[in-house]
Image 1 (cartoon, rainbow, N blue to C red):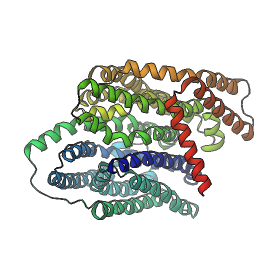
Image 2: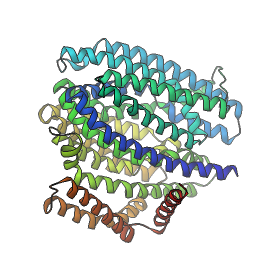
Image 3: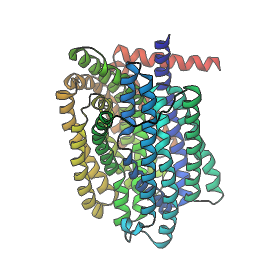
Image 4: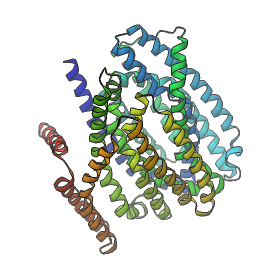
Length: 517
């Protein structure tokens, strides 16, 4: 019965993840153009620039989020409740200290903005940026200790509550912010709302852990062996976090320094589309983290583990590819009209190129993001960290050089090159050789699925060059036709029986819920 409950949590958690993702994307697509027009291109770029600067302080997490689930899984397997309680206390202590460090670092940055942005901002922008940075660093410093409670809920596989809270946070922020923007308030009001909503959600997490899960926190002197093991495990994840920040946030800081806030706004529009795209992949993979740790820690042979991990990796990767291939190809064929004519408006033509560069090159990583957790569970994430570190340095160098000449597109090219080399070549070899994943089998299955893309791509090219949309009605009609052709082609050519049954059952459940309502 308990096992069945966990399976239901996993299934419902996955469904809610996609519901949350759909809501997040819908709100983002509807809310962003309003925000751009009410704030103006310059302040929108300023808001994104400050957010990216503070986000880089999140590297102080040092990978402890992932390590909690790892050690919890080990202690849970041995039914060691006392060690779990000590683990809770240890992580809360660690993250509280990290939060204090983040606060100090943020205060220093807020009072020394000229070091970062030089002459890229004018006096008014510096004044607004300082206030935004103080508010965001306060929110970040609070989020560090609060993330422990979220990790505990995730480790208990209570995905329904966790995902529902994310949905509430996703809806509540824009719902409160939009009236304030319409009343004339600007970016500072947006950040104040973000801080307040985050605090409310964090309080709900605390209540769930203490009252519903009845978890205890025992604060005692940790064993040296545990602390040493924890440090070794998290040190390489910390490198990954630094790399991620360089790849995804440093571009905005560089652009602000050399090109100003308007160029940051152009890059941010393309980057936001990438973030929505990425969400489709992360929504499903996140709920499989505990299962991966169970497979790795099980008392089975290496052959059996390789079979189970390869099967899970391939099944999830194919499902992710089905979704991501539709979205990425759709952005290639229909994205420019959407960005310039519907969403961001005139002056954002280069945002389309930024979005395409980021989305196409990151797809390899996104259909394989279960591999990241497999590496961590097997304690083999060091290689990825080192590889990504050098690729991030290359990205930084290329971006600094190209952004001064090509602006936002130059920064995107640097990021795209680093991802093709790191994810497309190096990590695939490592997965196959060291991580118990048969990548030849994986790409063989992805290749067979890709055959279903041939017809949609031909149709998409025809829409772009033969019958380009002249009106919104024609544009929407072409999208509907493209989605139908993609679905039919994938069903007939690409999908296997498991995937057909999975999607059929999902559609039947949705129809059943519709009848109940």
